Image 1 (cartoon, helix red, strand yellow):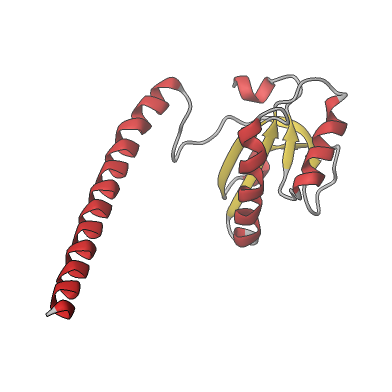
Image 2 (tube, rainbow, N blue to C red):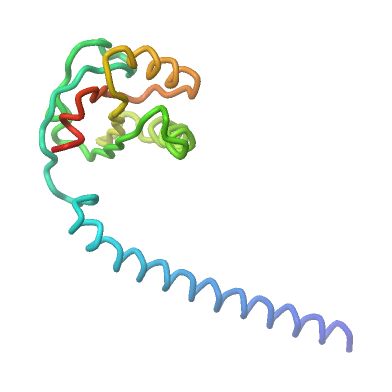
Length: 152
C-alpha cells in the first residue's frame, strides 16, 4: 500500500514539474517574442540585417595582426555575434568568458564572435589587453576608443 502511495506521489510531482516547466517555457517564449520588437524599436536588437560597416584597431585575436585596423565587412558571409563591452562593466567580466567558450566551440564554422571595447582613450588599450589576458579571451576584439562604431 505504501509503495502505491509513494508511486502515486512521485507521479503527481513529475506531472506538476512538467506542467510548471511548460508554463515557464511558454512564458519565456512570449516574453522573448514581446521583448524583441521593443528592443528593435529602441535600436538595441537586429536580426538578419546587415550591420553598418566600421573600421577599428584590433587589440586581440588569434592569427590577427594586433594593432592594425580591420573592417567588420571582412567577416561578410558569416553569422556575427557582435558584443559591445567595457573593462569597467561588471556583467561584461562574466559574459566574455562565456562567449570565449562559445567561440572555441564554433571556431572554424561560419560563425564569428567579435567584441568591441568601448573603453575611452588611447591609453586604455593597455588596460583592455590586460583585462583580456586575465579573462583568457582570444576571440577578435576591436577598440572603439572614439565611440564611432557604437554610435552608428
